[in-house]
Amino acid sequence: MGAMVGVALLGASVTNAFAADETLRSLAEERGRYIGAILNSEWFGGRIESQFEQIHKAQFNAVVAENEMKFDATEPSEGRFSYGNGDKMVKYAQQNGMRVRGHALAWHSQVPNWVNNYKGQKDKLFKVLKNHIENVVSHWKGQIAEWDVVNEAINDNNNHGWRSSGSVWFETLGADFLDSAFVWAHAADPDAELCYNDYAIEWGLGSGSKAGFVLEQVKRWKKNGIPITCVGTQTHIEISHETTPKNVRDFAKALAELGITLNITELDIGFPKGSANSLSAKDYQKQGHLYRQFMDVFLEEPNMGEFMIWGVTDAHSWLDGSQGKTQGLIYDKQYKPKPAYDSLIVSLKAHAPSEVVSPYSSNTPESSSSTDVSSSSSTITIKASMAPASLSMQVSGHTLLIAGTQSAMVDVFDMQGRPVFSAKCETGSIELKNVSEGLYVVRVRKGSASLTKRIAIK
Ligand code: G3I
Image (tube, rainbow, N blue to C red; front, side, top):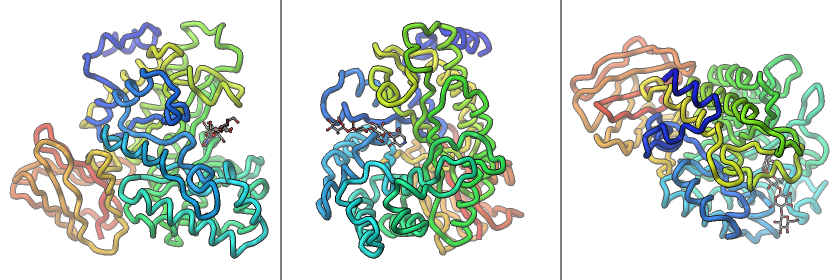
């Protein structure tokens, strides 16, 4: 493995050094995790090279629309909903066994003018946002595993607070719209994971930090029973941002204390704009090394579930449009894998499936029915994974009932990934002795079959 790591980091493509069928997707699925990329607007418009989709469905088991599920795309005029592009993506995802992220319900940007025209009309705008969320989330109920319910609602000031200007939602509704958006989304699809998503929250939890402000809001939402389940760190960073992987790990650990998942939702690692023609193999190795560090953190933190890249190829990236960055993705403009691709593969292979805990079941993504662990009943039925042994499990109080096999290894981890219980089950059920009330991740293994799920012990 050392030799392989060395070669990957040296920038030489080692893709051919891996088994032919090994992909980001196959390695992610073995570990109960999701690695995905956007379907960009060129794909929706049917104006993209065929390699894009070939690579996308071979390498990724999760997908999100770059623009086509935003407010302006799904409700372009009042009460007139447009689901065609979103339906196209959901169908593609179901045909290719991918988990779907919905992006984004309440955001200050890409809001159609008819909404902005209601600025100042509080009652009307509350109805507009509620109606939008109820219609859009209901339309894809059970098909979208996770929503960015609120996107980028925090300002970029030194001492962070809510984005109080340039947001029709905040300017008219105040901060109440955030709590309400989560409640409305949960009512429309109780099984969907619900995220707060933002950028520049990869800079540590220090006093006055944006991530620190997010953490305080999540604590308040959890205390008030707001049904948030995840935070999305967009992670649009630059090659010089070398401290960000550790900051993301620290953030994941802080959120794990709250039972909240942290997902990387829009990763790209850009070089300075205009530098494309002067970049060396050493530059791309450095990019690969930073990508690898994010993957290491992702695989090692038990409450991280999705690793989403904001594009496939440098030939199609938002970075070259409006941003001061370039060449931030894992395939080059000719759809060749860059060292960043190889480094991700190496990181995945360096973390055995038995070492990686997942906050989601190992169900195939389209089932997307992640059980709401906060449900009141103490009996939680966990859907069978697609593992060959069609394992399934059910928790009732402290009793774990396992179907699909009489005997299996049972391991229980707290949300910080610390083992709290491990035993062999011989009779199809086992008492989770001395496991106190709270949120845990239980993993049931039988041969090569494995089912992992977040559970609540009440
Ligand atoms: O669809 C119109 C097209 O009809 C028109 O001809 C063309 C030229 O004006 O514009 C097209 O709309 C563009 C849209 O992307 C679809 O391509 C918008 O102008 C353009 O502003 C929009 O940019 C998107 C940007 O969000 C908008 O804020 C980027 O593609 C998209 O990558 C980017 O994604 C965001 C996430 O949603 C949130 N996090 C940050 C991330 C990067 O900004």
